[in-house]
Length: 126
Image 1 (tube, one colour):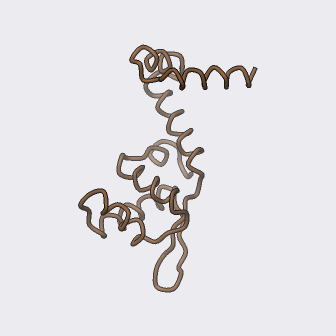
Image 2 (image 1 turned 90 degrees about the vertical axis):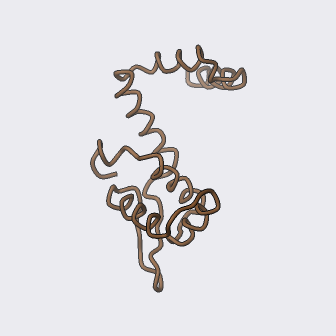
């Protein structure tokens, strides 16, 4: 990605578009629009504008294919999500993951299965 701060963060709608693109792989604005309009009322031009913004932020690459542009994600979903989580932890918890995890456990946002998986992952990294 280009520049950290404003280019790292994604709005809720930008992230929704990115999820569609990660699912589709290489795709056109039309293809993303078709998926999104099944979920909500949206204008084609809105999707096109948002995908251009995502390109300018460094999240998408595009190339001409026939009369349409084909977009693809610059980074894998896991890399972007990791960056967003790191940014969130830095801004909200001053870089400490502990308060985040404690909050998730305390508010019962982690299931027993989640806790078992986390425990297994910790043991694997030791």
